[in-house]
Length: 296
Figure 1 (tube, rainbow, N blue to C red):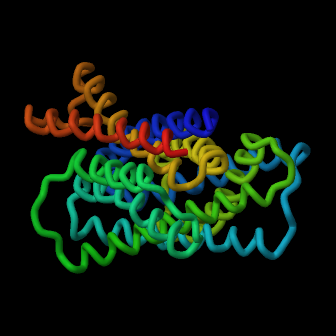
Figure 2 (cartoon, rainbow, N blue to C red):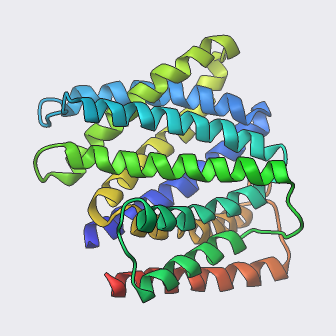
């Protein structure tokens, strides 16, 4: 459990770092969709390198189940990306980022109803607290359109499906070398995902400058996925996502450092009320993690 929690925190930190690089890219090129395509191309290369390095030490199952799961992962990831960017047309980016914290609730429902993995009292409370904290970190309030809610729901379902599938893929690898297996599965997953994304790569015509500017984001995100897969494999998807909710707190701390460094173009300034709300939500996140750990 300790390894899974630690891997989850590393992943949360790297994801928060990747968001900073993504802001820098979007501010320069003004197209988040371009970042997805260019970064997937870069991560496809990382995936191939990872596979070449790990194949001598791991055994990738050549089974129908494994490749079906891989196909579902690629489909769910791409559907998630599409729905996320459609949701961005209806919901402000800061609100949407917070609302993605509701994935914890979706995973809890799926775990109980479809996977028949019952939760206990403290675990239900931990899920509730982590969802409230994730949503409340940057949520500005106000009504949401029906279209926005629909694409938000589809995004949550797609991302939850990808989480569950990637965990099962790790479990199918023989042996008990969890971290090495996680690295190998990350290589397989992002090689396949990048191969599909390359179809859009040639249509969008990413320039050399775009590819270079996407590298910092791609490196941070790819490393985050390695630790995320390892966390899910060690402690489960639901607990792993509760640990992932800490990226909201980490993002706030990184924001403070960026503001102190004078990089307010990467982290907009907010008022005292927002900082108070973020502090309260951070306490709720820590409480949720503690409760779920005790319940386990």
